[in-house]
Amino acid sequence: MKTFLKAAATAALLATSTASATFADNHGWKPEGPIKMIIAFAAGGGADTSGRLIADEVTAATGWDIIPEQTTGKGGINALLALKDMPADGSAIALVVTESLGYNAAAAKGAGITPADFTGLTTTAGFQMGIVSKSDKGWKTFDDMIAAAKGGESIRFGVMSPKLADLAYLLGEANGVEFNIISVKGGKAVMNGVTAGDMDVGFMAGIQGKGVASGDLVNLASALSEPLKQTPEAPMMSDLGVNFSADGYFVFVAPAGIPEEAREALSNALATATSTGKAGGMISKAFGGATNIMGAELDALLQSDYENAGKLMEAAQ
Image (tube, rainbow, N blue to C red; front, side):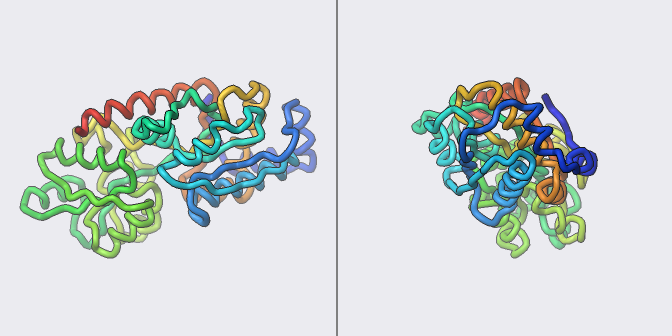
């Protein structure tokens, strides 16, 4: 099931004094104790904040006791390893990204992780991943950057994951140039590098929004398989000769094998929280709104990402 929840409508629906009772009536499952929420992102960042706000909204609606804690590192692999062997009874969940269960799991062969080791609950929001430069570079389009590279300029391309490094390599190859790919930790580091002039261009997953709106930054292209919401005229990866994309979502998962009633109750509670109260407001502002992919559709998405990761690695060799 794929739904795009509207914050105002959902907030109005839940703004009753009987919200908690209604949820309990409609979803017979409830946890026997606290729910551990493993967050795969550094404290204080947008992803961490969204997870904690979602936990607050779920607690307010259901009365469940949710305890967030950080387990960071290796692109979500450490969080997944921590979750994998926890009880499959709904008492433990993790917030990662689909890339964690896709490219990162496929690349970390020694970790022995596949999507089959987990139960998908719901995505919370997608990435508005753009290929971004400073406006004072003088580039208004992706073609302008390619022309500069072909004119002899060395283009320093910032990335924050191995998957994005592969995509940057394929972008250069498809357009007849060779980028100087610089790997850093996190999208904020890419934005800081671009704005400081240490990089000429980089992948940014929504963090560029204010800069683009003010005219300080330019979305030269969408790194997705669809147009960017803020800059719909920017070309997509397929327009640039690359048959892969940086499509991805923040996603909650549980250990494999949790009861179906637990999966349904957790999925619905988490999805509703993404468009409710402070969590909904934050997700709307930072990520362009909630995107909830659940059930069989989420299972298929996670498996497809994992399988496509191998194809991307092979193409970038």
